[in-house]
Length: 233
Figure 1: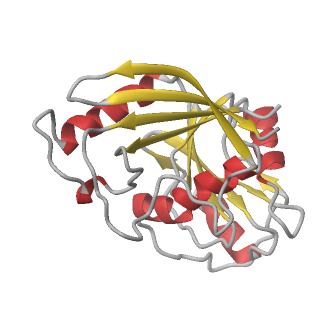
Figure 2: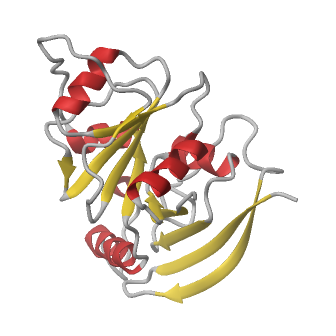
């Protein structure tokens, strides 16, 4: 069964993805709002978090270190651990991410990969203690992969904290159940700046509908908005 997926983001009222570019506020600082975001993260009770390749590369900071010997790569999946208390999931279609171990922030790493990933890269991940799932079709089926994470690892609740394109693509695919936003009293307002959700030229109109679940005032001028996410009728 597919885990419940919550897209959790810290943003400004104009939908900015970059707190470093925001205006200042007498109500609080970026550090205050980031702390509120972490507080909400804990309150939502996820047993895993998920990001895209770009975000995960900034976190892991590891470089390629392919194995020296040949080994038979396990497909379509390899689970180095099945008993972790929490998981860090990365969507990496092209197999460009690298890790120095199978743990990040105490969470076990699982990578979701495209079908054309090389055996050498899979061997590298296995050697580092990283779990992975390789798509069995040319078009990566994230929904099937999430279902496998639920079945094989018992993951029930994923906090999606990706970049705009990852968030948008999972929403368009009907894989996001809830959107949870910590909105800070600041603005970016730059032309062409990244938003928290993006889906190409067509956008999400006609694909997704939001319905308000809750609106909670937080400290430092921020609010917590929660929406249920549905496929457009």
